Each structure stands twice: as C-alpha cells, then as structure tokens.
Amino acid sequence: MAQVGYFLIIARALGPTGYGTFMACTALAAVLAPFSPLGTGQVLVKYTARDEHLMPTYLGNALIITSGMGLMLIAAISLFRHLLLPATVSIVMVIAVGTADLICAQVTYVFAQALLATGRARQSSSLMFVSACTRLAAAVLLIATGAPSVKRWVGFYLAASIIASVHGAIVICRTCSAPRFDAGMLRATIQEGFHFSTSLAAQTVYNDIDKIMLARLSSVQGAAIYAVAYRFIEVSMLPIRSLQSAAYPEFFRYGLGGVRRSFGFAKRILHRSVLYGLFVSIFLFLSAQFLPLVMGSAYADSAIALRWLCPLPLIQSLHAFLSDALTGANFQAQRSWCQIGVAVFNVLINLWLIRAWAWRGASLSSIASETLLAMLLYLLIRFYLQREQGRLDADDSCVGPVAPEVG
Image (cartoon, rainbow, N blue to C red; front, side, top):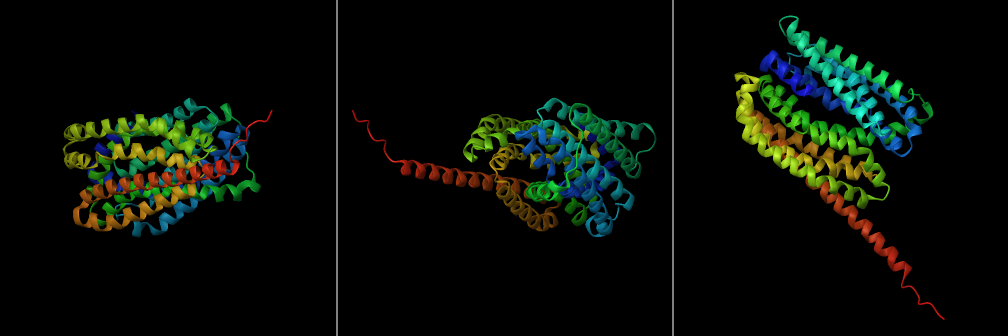
C-alpha cells in the first residue's frame, strides 16, 4: 500500500509532463540498475541458501561492487543524458535519481536478499516495506512543504533512499553478521553474477525501455499516460513478486536435483499464480474505467492504456516461475540468453510501433514480448527435461536386468 500511495501522490502532484520527465529518468536507471550489483545479490542468495556461513563474505563483496559500479553508471548517464533522455531532464535530476536508484536502492535490496537467504523472510519483507514507506513519507512531505516540482521531488526522493539503505545496514548488523570483504573471491563472484545481471537487465529492458523510447520518440505526456497504466500492472503483481521472492532460495535447493525437481516445484506454485494472474487481468479490464477518478482527468487516456495492458499479469504470473526453475537448476546462462533475445525483439518492434501508434504501440510490444518470453522458457525447460530423461533411460539400460538368485 505504501508503494501505491507514493505513486498516486507523485503522479497527481507532478502532472503528466512532470511525472513523464521523472519516469523517463527512473526508467533509464531501472534498465541500468542490474549492472550496479552485477548479479552479486543473486550469487549471495544461491550460496547462502546452501551454506549460511558464507553470507558475510558474499554480502561484503556485493556491497563493494554495487557502490563502485553505481558511481560509474551515474557518470556514464551524466555524459550521455542528451542522447538518452528528453531535454526536460537536468543533470541534477540524473545525479539524484542515479544515486537513489543505482546505489542506495540496490544496496537496500542486497540487504533484503541476505536476510531472505538466511531464512529471515519476515525481516526481508519488512526491510523493503520500510523502503517503500520512506518514499511515501517523502511524497507527503513534498506536498506539505510547498508547491511540488520535479526538481524538489528528486531531492526528497534521494533523501528517502539514503534513509532506507542506512536502516538496512543497521538491521543486517543487528540480526546477522557484519559484512566482510574478500578480494580473493571478488573475480569469481563477478563472473558468476554476470549472467544474473544480464538476465535482470534484459528483463528491465522489456519492462522499462518503452517508457524511455516514448519520451524520446513520442512525448513525455504519452510516456506518463503509459507509465501510469503500467504502474497499476506492477502493483497488481506485488503478491506474485512477494511469492517469487520467498520461493527463490528454494529453487536453488530443489535445483540440486536437476531441472525436473526445480520444475516440479514450480508447477506446485503455478497452479495458484496463474489463477491469480487470470483474476487480476479480468479485474483490471473491468475496473479501468475508474482510473481517472483516482488519478485525475489529466490521465483519462491511461484507462484505455490499462485495458490494452491487462493481459500482462496472466502472462507474467506464468513465466516468473518458469524463469526461476531454470535458474535453480544452474541454467541461468540459458535463461539470460532467452531474456536478452526478447529484449532485443522489444526494442526493435518499439522503434516501429511507438512511432506509428505511440503508447498503443508500446502496449502491443509489451504483450508480444512477454508472450514470446513465456514460450521460449517453456520450450527450454521441455528440452532439458527430455535430456534428463534420456540420461536416466541410458543409465537404466546400462544396469541391465537383475539376475535371479540361485539356491
């Protein structure tokens, strides 16, 4: 609810132009965010889920990498902002949003992953809830302390992110061990984390690149209309994301037995997640007409955009756990290649669809990309299931029939 409240306040306070400018900046940060920790948070979960004593070292390395890479990414965005972002985005906004999303938010998320991997799911959820509450409090303070503007908002946004990351550090030190840095493990951690980071980057590309392209190829107002509708999709998926986060360490444990076991675990979850996705898709289609009452008349077209996007919860509730089934069985690289292919597909068709139909084109590309991803992941799982079955059959044939006992 804190995320919903923060979103509603800021979207209404800044209006389509201001919110579209802010969303273009945060969307670019979201696309680059996976390259800040370089997948070290996922590596932390993988090994800590199997041996909790490894957590402090993997956590320390993840924090060092996240901070260093975050600074490099902020510098890169600052240099190329005129090519990547609309003219309404200032250098101050780039630095503030970059620091908030590429360093502070990623550090907070790494802390949450450490808690989750050590079996402290409640504390992990609480940490992310506090992070959302700080942004909600910042949004309320923005309204209460004067006329809202994008320039003022990014200052509050950065302050909230800093507070959340400091709170995360305190929680980690009190409930777990303090982070430790091990330079000897750094290279191996980065190498393994690379596939996780490319996978997450590809995912954010086909989720967020359309907002950036809308702001550049169409208008910031069109980007705001689309972003508001898409945010309702993201909010509706929060229960699935929470379930996915809680189940993530379990996929690594089941994955020790191969893709058959990890996929079997996924199927137990899919029965519920797909039903939820279907229900939410229908609900969003029927309730979209009330969106202007919540967001204001300036976002009237977002109601239409929401109806265009309403199939997404059903599709995403399916491929979310297919992806983790592959990751848990040590097929992260193959998952990454599927997602990279879908990201490239999304960018290419957006170049055509957004120019032709603005946010309607972005909606079509999102549905097409998410559907393609679900199909590719399922086909990949079927391939590895057949390969595992072939190995089992070969092993059985090598054993041969059991000879009868004599006597």
